[in-house]
Image (cartoon, rainbow, N blue to C red; front, side, top):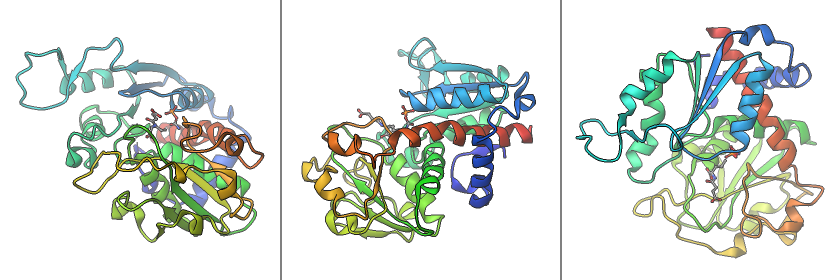
Length: 317
Ligand SMILES: CCC[C@H](NC(=O)CCC(=O)O)C(=O)O
Ligand SMILES: NC(=O)OP(=O)(O)O
């Protein structure tokens, strides 16, 4: 595997899950693979889990790791071609990318949607320049439209906790004060649609995700109906996708916050969220602190999803 940007790059999901569970019980068993190999992690946006879990996964595999926060310490980067660079950006992405590629064997990139140009975001303009110009294998640490390391960890977690072969999984929108990317919701939907789970997406009107991510999911505008009989509740905020509201907050209705009254409608569902989470906006304190909340094991599985991906890329070098 040379690139990891979406669910299809992993191939057969059952095989990937088998490999994940094997690694989880033997995470230091492949240190020769990463010996004298360097991972470079490039962040255009903040991170805790991705930053720490991916570094840990690389160290488990015997790799060296370098981390670069583009907006702290590195030169501000011009990303538009043809621009006269007489402003506050001394370096162009088209030099910086191949230079970074000189110093490592594998590159991870985090570059959120900017909401300035929907086409640029949904064509993954930044991530694809790293793929095109770095000369190295590249994986996404959350790009404009997907967060595959998160979604793979989410799938591992559901497989660990499910009590039936085909659980009912509900992705629910919840309110947030800022315009957040659709990436986590898109990606979770893409991965859930690749399983044989019963998958439902619930959100207010106006928050429809792009059709290519909704796929065959059932869309239910009534959150309480969606929660009925659910085995897993996956909460996430996202900003509007459909024009003319792309990247906008069009609803902050706190009746969509996941609370214990709503969780009581479910089949004693587990609560999931990728974190970081805005308590009492997305979810009430008592729900995220309840015995049904699996957000910490979910975050712990980020080390495993990253290690499967890095191991497969190392094996292809
Ligand atoms: C893994 C999630 C990363 C990001 N989350 C945020 O940017 C949260 C920022 C905030 O709550 O102000 C998102 O929603 O895509
Ligand atoms: N879930 C996740 O990717 O967290 P960070 O943004 O903290 O990396």
